Length: 146
Image (cartoon, rainbow, N blue to C red):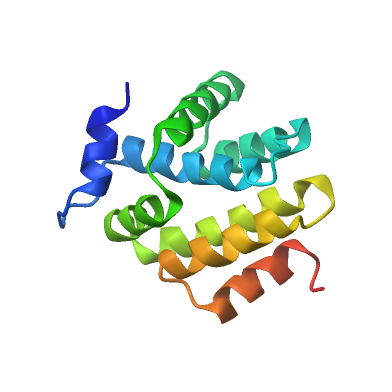
């Protein structure tokens, strides 16, 4: 179903992803982080919906549809290393930096930082080309400066 998008993500190329594909790939990354602790909660789904609705100006129906598509893409996507490196190559830096903050929002949506989620965000941040300092600042912004 997502073969063409996965092909564009994982084959070398200098072209940026079309907006619709970038939205889907980045939302799938949010889903991957939320699923990493094997507890994909309603709170995490709600947070993902809030993030993508605000980020992309979507209504409830479009938000739900994008998350559903992203859940399916995430299930088919290659390993996290290849997937995030592909996003790094296809998505502008500023958008990737904003995604790190969104990833922390998803991790903290259920009120705790599971080790699996924390480790995955740290790895993803590195593969997206975002510094540890910028990731920490993003987390602090989400976590109220803690």
